Structures are given as C-alpha cells and as structure tokens.
Amino acid sequence: MRISAHFLDVREAGETCVKYHVAGIMKANKIQPLWGYKAPRSIVGRSFIITPNRLQRGFTVDHLDRAWVTDITYIRTWQGRVYLAVVMDLLAHEVVGWPMKSTLV
Image (tube, rainbow, N blue to C red; front, side):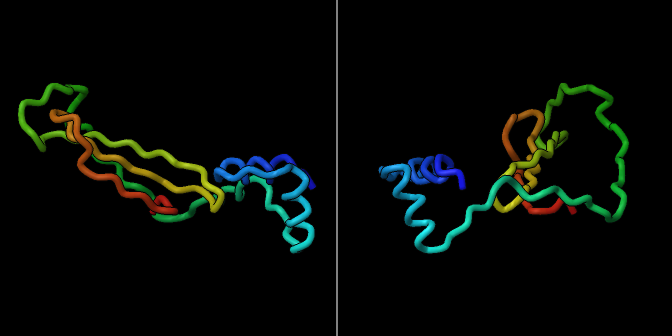
C-alpha cells in the first residue's frame, strides 16, 4: 500500500498529520485505496448531424445573437469523466450557456 498518496490527500484537505498515522487508521478500519481513473468506455449511439458552415470563417458580426461559437471538453474526476460544452456569443464575447453532463449524448 502506498502511503504518500493518502498522506497527500489528507494534506490537500487542509489537515496536518503524520504520514504513517493515515496508513494506520486505514489499516485499522480495513479501508483499501482506489487507484487511477475509470477506463473510458466507447460511446455507441446516434450519429451526429453536421450543420453547414454558415459563417464561412467570417467572424465579423454586427449584432448580438447572430453568431455563436461553441467548444466541448472533458474534465477528469475521481468518479469518471464530465463533459462540458460552452456556448459563447461571438460579438459580446460572453458565455450564453454551459451544459455539463457525464455523457456526450
């Protein structure tokens, strides 16, 4: 059992303790560590619809709500991946919305 990882978790939570004290408490309570992240699963579902490029790389906009841009990314957590999609108005440079889900669908 690696002790340093548990010790760092306790320190990250703002607590102070001796490295081997954490291991002793875990052993006394029969707590086993979990290592790494869950393996990503392949997503099988409907195919995505590709919309036509109406801007044709013309990113100069003169009115609000005429053109939005978006990006999707994922965030790794201890429970798995969380997908974040951000939608931004191209003229105001303000975020219009940001849904976050555990799946892409």
